[in-house]
Amino acid sequence: MFKFIKDRQWAGIEAAKAEGVYQGRKKNVDDEEIRRRIAAGATKASVAHDLKVSRMTVYRALASADEPSNA
Image (cartoon, rainbow, N blue to C red; front, side, top):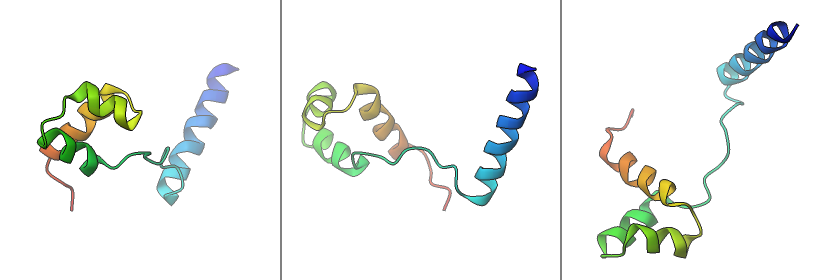
């Protein structure tokens, strides 16, 4: 029974993604702001504390700058 529920849930998520509805949560902080602060010499921990985000968010913002865009 649980497999059936999971299959239906997965199908619904895939259908929503195909329609562009299922996109996840919006960002609370701009990645560019994080990069500016790091470039200015701030530590990753202090940037995270000042912007009230996790250090992992800071690391993701910095990693996304290194990845080529899909555009």
